[in-house]
Amino acid sequence: MDSAVDTTVPMPEKQVGTVGKVMRKTSRLLTRSGILATMIASLLFCVLMAVAWLAVMQLLALLRTEIQLRLSSFGAILLLDGIYWLLGGVLFLLFVAPFFWGRLHLAGRVCLGESPLLREMLHYYTSWRRLGRSVLISLVLALELLIPLTLVLGAFGLSFFLYSAVFWELFLYEWVARLLLILCLVFSALFSLLVFMIASVFALSTAFAVGNEELPLSRAVALAFRRGIGRFGSVCLFTLRSLWHLLLSLCTVGVLHLLWYGHHYIISYLCLAMALDQGEKQL
Image 1 (tube, rainbow, N blue to C red):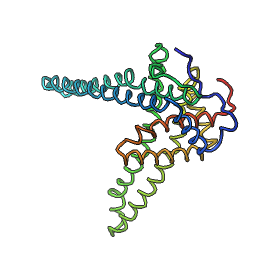
Image 2 (spheres, rainbow, N blue to C red):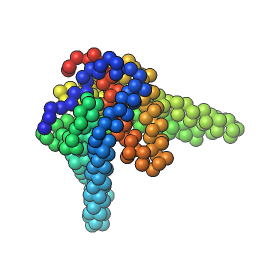
Image 3 (spheres, rainbow, N blue to C red):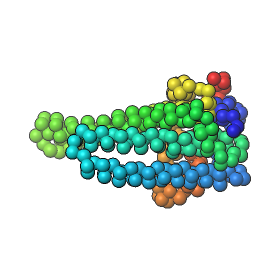
Image 4 (cartoon, rainbow, N blue to C red):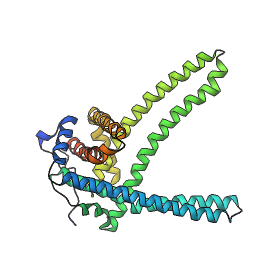
């Protein structure tokens, strides 16, 4: 297997710039011979593995139900549920997530101007160390997603709590309480947008972690924060444009995502990380 892709290699000065330049570079890369077909095949393979995991979980759910019917202790039922979800998480980390990171590894080679083969998706199965790193990358990303989601849900939950437990008690008029609820929801929406933008900065850590396998994950997160905050506007613009592409994909029931935007996103994501990291010495 070829050596790991290092997406922290500085880009030529003429290729480093705005998000628009990154997007245009990605479009040029995807239109190279065979690249788009390889990326489509890699996405379909990842979807196939995810569907296979869901099928296994359904079979395990049937087995869990059969066992629960024979249990009389509530504690035993909870323990069985915990084992079920823990086993599902382990199966996902070991047999699904490595293919997604392998696809990101493949996209990294595309960013470097190469024409990788589909077998690059097996990159994280080529050694126990790489498989372990894949698991750690998945856990770090899950944490980076869980924290913002908790903050967002907490903000909206607090708004409704204040409406039902405080505003109704303090104000005699219903319209005042509802007006305050609307203001709280607007504030929560703005807060959620800010949290989402900051989370997108930390999401760059996945690109650094996959691109440089010698880089500890803690340093990948720190590097993503330094580079992302330094070019926060570029990261926000990239996130907003990606959301627009996602909306277009949803309007076509995922067809555009399969044929173009799904591959355009991960390649441009890696190209952006490379652009933000220009001039960084090898770590």
